[in-house]
Length: 159
Image (tube, rainbow, N blue to C red):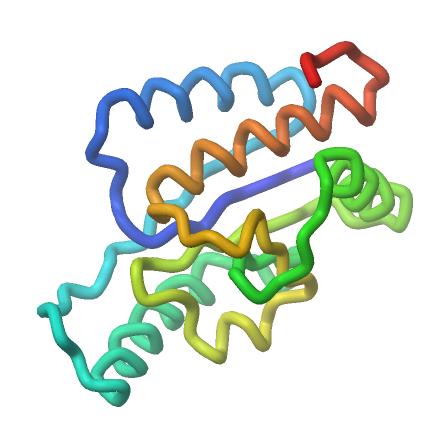
């Protein structure tokens, strides 16, 4: 299984970088995992709605350019479907059973995702009604994908 995370922005905090590196190492036993960073669009504070859409659309074009044609796309969105760890694991397992061998998770920038990206998405996933920093979301996502693989393989992982 090939899994990639396409995410807007760079990780600046060392502790998040270290956590990501650790989960990428752990995940290498289960799948091919890749992180693709998209440059975030520089935007001043207090943007109008129209200016926010322009920023999201520019980032969205960059995101879409990094998603392979045959990939099953899971976008992280506050208004997406909330799943338990077991349900996310089952989702990944069901995709494999149905012949999907390429999954792309998409994490937008601070303004969210463009309509073009959400339209391309095959499944909209929400981790919470709360808003998380998109950089920290990468680490949380990798941990949950790792947990999912442990569940799929019937291996223990703390609950």
